[in-house]
Amino acid sequence: MRRKVLFGIDYTDSEFIKLALYLFVGGTAALVEWALFYLLLHYLLNGLGMSLTALTMTSTAMAFCLSTLYHYFLGNVLVFDSGSRYNRGKELSLVFLVSVMGLGFNLLLMYIFVSWLGWEPMLSKVLTSCIVVVWNYLSRKKWIFRS
Image 1: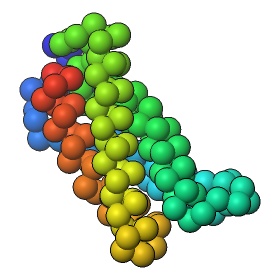
Image 2 (image 1 turned 120 degrees about the vertical axis):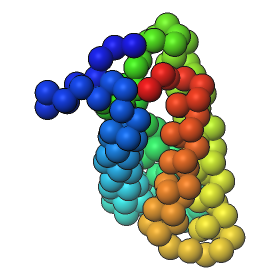
Image 3 (image 1 turned 135 degrees about the vertical axis):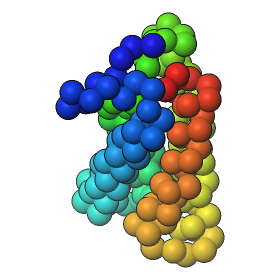
Image 4 (image 1 turned 180 degrees about the vertical axis):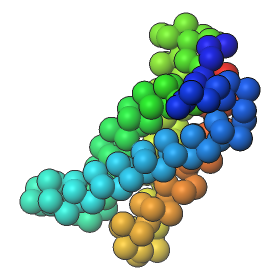
């Protein structure tokens, strides 16, 4: 396992600090995702003549994918020991698989909240992110990385 040091503090064996950093990484990734979702929904994709459901699903998928890349890179730097359990190719494949499943959960929940329940898309996105973050953390910790 590679040493994890931040501001001169070695936190390699501190699960508390790693969890706090994961929440920081996840929190900033959520902000990135929400900002991208909002921009895509209201400005970038809005003029394409899509239904609200199609617009919501497309914005969700695009924002999720871009924020997942951000999360992967920052998470590897601050929290997880990238390349310690699997070679980088297999690791990236597993991250992609977990992310696709997370995207599936995201899309399903967004469809339920927006199309079935009639909730506002931005509120639905925030709630969905809060639910999916649990999947992301547990799956990455258990199956992909050593933390």
